[in-house]
Length: 95
Image 1: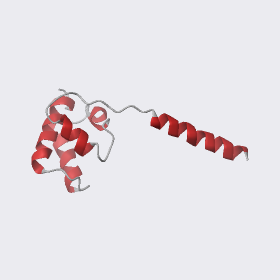
Image 2 (image 1 turned 90 degrees about the vertical axis):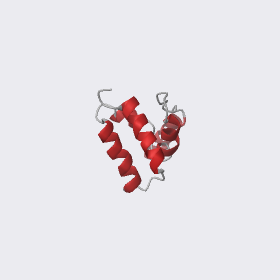
Image 3 (image 1 turned 30 degrees about the horizontal axis):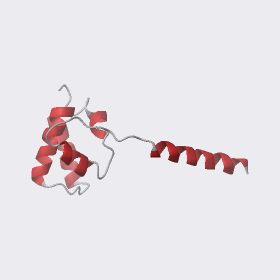
Image 4 (image 1 turned 60 degrees about the vertical axis):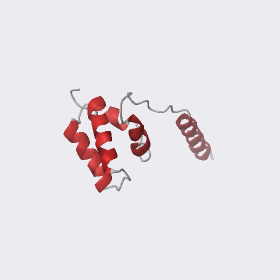
């Protein structure tokens, strides 16, 4: 019985912590709205920050293209270019 109580308490604590999570603010710039809408629809917006040290323009282009071609992200080709430009400018390695 004690295990059930401990498990239930852990679940309730985790749910409360998740509910209090603040949205990740992205840097201001042209294309931020598309990143929030298109990228944020499928995954957390902390992804650009986490990967910024590793991805240059070519890396972000490969990531966005992978999301579209492999994971069928519904991103228009023109929007993909704007998203890549935004990510490379604001979260590109060395920039």
